Length: 505
Length: 122
Ligand SMILES: [Fe+2]
Ligand SMILES: [Fe+2]
Image (spheres, each protein chain N blue to C red):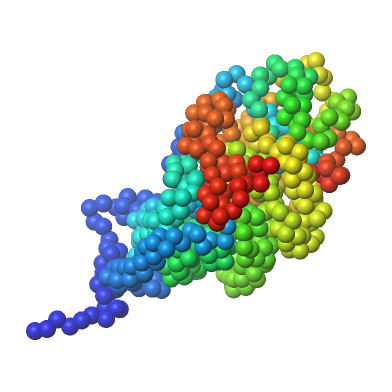
C-alpha cells in the first residue's frame, strides 16, 4: 500500500506530539528549573500559538534554497572583484563595525534561543525558539562568509571574534547580550525577541542593508535578503511572547513593563553605533538617524504601543528622552571614535564640507550650533599638524559601558552625570535610564567588566596603550587611525588610479 | 530592589569587580572640564589617595587638557571646582583623600570666561 503524503499541519502535529509530556521519574520543576524564578505566572502553556508551524524538513528545504542563492552571489562577487564597485573604501569600515559588533551577537542569540527553547515547558515556544536558534547560527555563519571576501583586501576584519570579547567599545554590544543571556528565559525573550527583534530591529537591519545597497555592496545586500524571511518570523515570535505573557496572568504586567522599559533603553544605547554609521560612515547616505528614528520608532513604535494598550502595556519609560537624543547621539558617538581612533579597529575621518552641509540640513536645530564648530575646529587643528587624540581613558557608564559622552536632556552643552552610592561604593551612569537599571539589580551590574577599569587593574595585557592594543590583536598602523593615510586608502587609490593620499602634504 | 536570581545566595557570591583593593594602592578619579566638550567625556585615572590636589592639577589635569586652544589661558586660581556634586574650594597642598576624594570620585571644573572653541562649548 502506498504511503500517503502528510500535509504540513499533520507533519507539525507529529513533530510536536507529546513534547510536553509530564515527567514521572523526575519532578517537572527539576526538569525545568528556570521558568519560574522570574515571577512570571503561566496558567496554560497550550495557549502559546506557534504562528508558523514549520516542520524541520520544510525548514531545511527552504533555508538550503536561500543559502544556495546567497553563496552563488558571494562566489560571483568574488570572481568579479565586487569590492571594486563599492562607493568608496570608507564604506568598508561599516562592515568592520558590523562584523566585530553585530555578527557575534547573532551567535549569542543562537545560544540564548537554544537555552530558552530547552527551558520553557510549552511546546509552542520550544519549537519556535529552536527554529530561531538555528536561524541565528546561520546568520552568524553567512555574515562571516559574506564579509570574509573583504578580509582579503582590507584591515580590521580578521580578528573580529577575538576583538568582540576584548576591545573597549565592543564591550557595549557584548555586555548587552551577556546581560540578556544572564537573565531568565522570559526576560531573554522580552529583551531579544520583543524589544530588540520587534521594536528596534528595523533600526539595525534596515540601515545596514540599505546602506549596503546604496554603496554598491551587493554581497551584503544579498545576505540581508536571505535573512529577511527569518526576521519576519522572529518579529512575530517577539509579539507572540508579549501577548502570551500578558494574557496569562495580570501579575505579569508590571514585570513585563519593567523589562520593556529596561530593554528599550539598553537597545537604544547600543543602536547609537548604527546612528553614527548612518550619519558619518556611509559615503552615500540613506537617510539621517533622526529620520530613521522618526519612521521606525516614533511612527511604527507608536502604533505598536497603541495596539498593546489593551493589555495595559505602556510606551517604554524614557522613550521621549531617546527621541530627544536622536538629535545628538550620532555626533557625540563619532566624536568619541574620532578622538580614540588610535584605539579603534576601524578608520575614522572628519566630515568634508559637503558632508557637513548634509548634516546641517538634516539637523537644522542643533548641528550648526553645537557640532559643526567642533568638526571645523578639529579640521583646523589637523591642518596645523595637531590632529587631536584623547590620550586619557574615558569614564564609562556602569550599565551600558559606553563612554559618558552624552549631554543632559534639554542642554546639549553639559555632559549628563548620574551617580548611585551602593554598598559603600559610587557607581556612575550616563543617563537616568542606565541608573534605573542598575538601581533595580545592583548586584548584577556591580560585576560589569568595564574595559577602562580592567586596563587599570592590569588585566588587559599591560599598562601601556600598545600593550593593550596588542592584547586586542589590533594591528597598529593598519587597523586603527584615520582613513586618510591608511593602507586601506592606499590599496583603494591604487585600484582607482588615484594620486597618493593628501595626508602626505 | 534586590536582584532576581535562581540562586537564593546569588548576592553573596557576587564579585564586586571594581573594588578599590583591585587597583594596586590607587583609587579611581574622574575629571571633567566643563564647557569643553571637545573631550567627549570625563577622563579616568588611577591615583594614589596621598597625591596632593595641586599635583593632580599640574601633573594630571593640565597636561591631559593641553591640546585645547583654551588650555593655555586657564587661570588655575579662578577655577571653580565641584567634587561629587558639591561646589568646593580644594586645598592644593592637601591630599586627594584630605580633600574628601574617595574611590571613583568625580571632579568637575569650570573655567570662567572660557567656554570652548568660539564659545560653542566644544
Ligand atoms: Fe539574526
Ligand atoms: Fe549608560
